[in-house]
Length: 90
Image 1 (cartoon, helix red, strand yellow):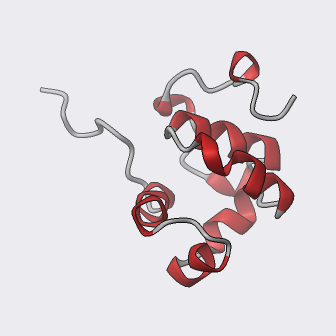
Image 2 (cartoon, helix red, strand yellow; image 1 turned 90 degrees about the vertical axis):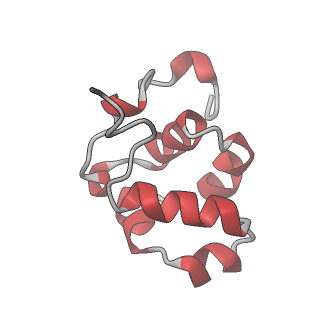
């Protein structure tokens, strides 16, 4: 079932590939779960947003599908390579 946390292959952000273009629609939903953005899993699935589409989205695209500004900016950073906690290792 899409959105079932027990089936998410990504248990850590670090397991998500840098190249998002190969992610399936279900994979994108799993990524959203890892980013604590559960509310968007169904929306992205309904819009059939896979990794290739995700990489092409911009702020206006996220606004058009009603993703709030904070989450849109978080996703744009993620698409650009940001990962939570990255760079904090000493």
